[in-house]
Every structure is written in C-alpha cells, then in structure tokens.
Length: 77
Image 1: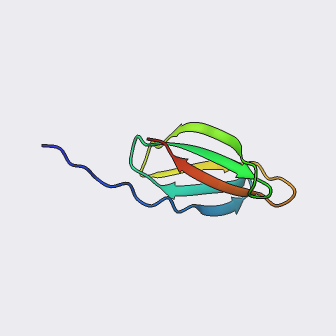
Image 2: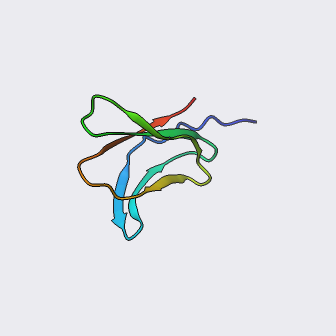
C-alpha cells in the first residue's frame, strides 16, 4: 500500500534572533529546497541549493546584513 501525501504550501516564517535571520517553512520529510535572495526582486542569488528537509519543518539561519533583502524558497522536484 502506498500513500501520496500532498506537499504543504511553502509559507516562510521569518524570525530574528541573536544568530541572525531564521527562515522556517513546513515540508515533507526528505524534500529538497533552494533558497534565493534579492535586494530588489529583479535579480536572484542562490543562498543554498539542494537543502534537505530532515523534519516536517525545514529552515535555515542566515547572518544579518545591512539593507533590505527578499528571500524565496523553491521546492525541488
């Protein structure tokens, strides 16, 4: 018997602590993600690629930077 569970929507929850900016989002165990950043939404730079979800809540801690940054998370097939 096999089950096909749908992926939860990627809704990023940002938090700020003493280590920097933490991005968390729900995931299925074993899914992989790419996180990208941009300063103006036109050009995107890969922060990390092929990040595996080891729990049902995937996340990444980033250092703090000066200025405005945007982030997006891409679920890999």
